[in-house]
Image 1 (cartoon, helix red, strand yellow):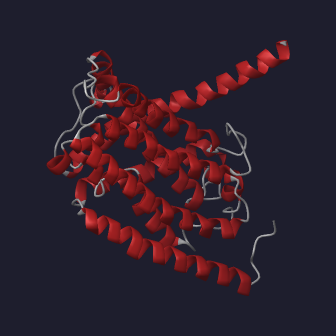
Image 2: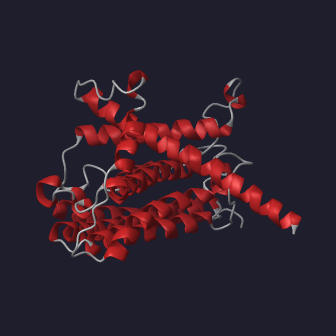
Image 3: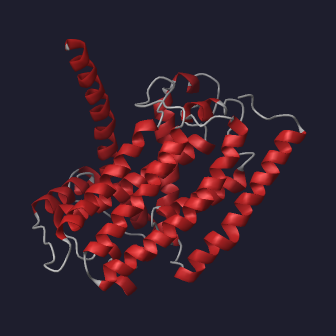
Length: 333
C-alpha cells in the first residue's frame, strides 16, 4: 500500500513539474506576442506592469479571475460551462508525451505521435460545444468555421507527419529526435516544414487564418458570450496549443533537444534548453506572421488547405517513399 502511494505521489509530482512551467510559459509568450506586434508596428507594447511589462499577463489573469462569469439565460448551461474546461484540459494533457530530453518525458509511449494527433483532434469539440451552447448566431457561426478549418488542416498535418515517419520507422517521439542526429529533417523535408508551419497557423486559429474569431464579421466568434475566467480558459487552451504546435515542429523537423552544433561548448548545454530555444524561435515566427500578413477570406482558406496543401503533401509522400525504396534507405523496424 505504501509503495502504491509513493508511485501516485511521484507521478503527481511529475505532472505538476510539467504543467506549472507550461502555464508560466503561456503567460510569458502572451507578453512576448504583444511585444513583437508592438516592435513591428513601432509601438511600446506592455511596459508598465512590472519590469519591461513582464507582469502584464499576471495582471490580466487576476482581472479575469475576479470578473463576473455571465451565463446567458437561453444557453445550455452545462455544455456552456464544460466547453472551456474541455478546451484547456485537452491542450494541457497533450504535453504528456513531449520529450524534453533523452531522460525527461512524462509518458514515453511508443505511439506518442498518434496520441498527440488524437488529442489535438479532440480539441475542436470544446470550440463546437461553446459555440452551440451559447445559443447565439455569432458564436455558432464561429464554431462551425473553426470545425471546418481544423478538420481541413489536420488532414494536411497528418500526411506531413507520414513523411517523417517514413524516414524514422517509429511512432515514438524520442526515436524521431534521435533519428535526426546526422541531419535535421527540415533540410530534406523543407517543403513539408513550410506546409506544416502554415497548417499549424490554421490549426490554432492564428492570423492570417483567425476566421473563427473575425471581429469584423463575428464579433469574437465562439467566445462572444463568454466572460471572466471561462473566457480566459479558451485563451489558455489556444496558447497552449500554439506552444504544442511549436514543440511538434521542433521535434519533427528541428531535431528536438539535439544541439545544432556538435562542438564544445554547445554539446554541454542541456537538451531541454535547446528544445525551448527552438520552440521560442517558431513562436516568434508565429507572432511575426500575425503582425505582418493580412487575413485570408474563408474561401481562400479552404482552397489553400484542400486544393494546394493536401495534393502537395500527398505527392511528397510518394516522392519520399520512392526515394527511400530506390536507394534502400528504409528504416529497419
